[in-house]
Length: 209
Image (cartoon, rainbow, N blue to C red; front, side, top):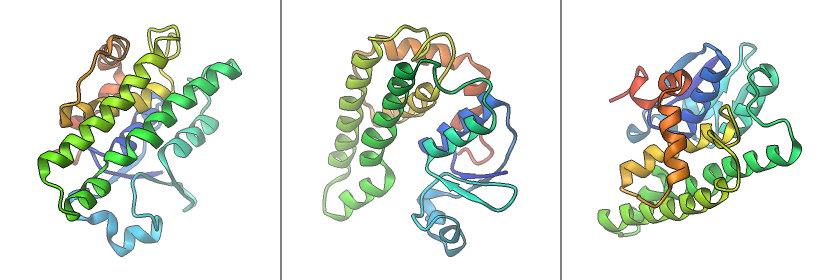
């Protein structure tokens, strides 16, 4: 399989975490977002959205959207599981992952920030927007995660929620978004020592700058 991504793309990062948790080896192909490589015709032929990540399967099938890719990999390699066993807990884990992937990340990604600058907003204002979006979203995550037992987001092992959370924390640091998040910080510290999260970290990727 081939994972098309970018070292700092948080959605690509989520998939790298899942691959590492599952012990799945793939070929990585980098597409530099700031150079517009995701808008080249050859990449658009894979994903007409022009977004990362893309997982290209051995038979040429193309999968897009990080959470969909993660659940495909979980179906293909069910151990260790990405979701808790109980139906309600599974729904909660998916909700945290979607809160991050669908509500926080899209409105502070490069495409949106570039559009804001094109509309005449200054760099400080744009970065402030991104920090506000991240802070508000992680405030909600902190409250929700406080309802569930740890040490990870949902119990004794990482789930899809942890795979979504950790890359978003990296974005929070980049944009200077800070908050009172003891539960989140405890999860982050735990993941920092986990081999899968270490292997998937942006700094460990071949295209890291």
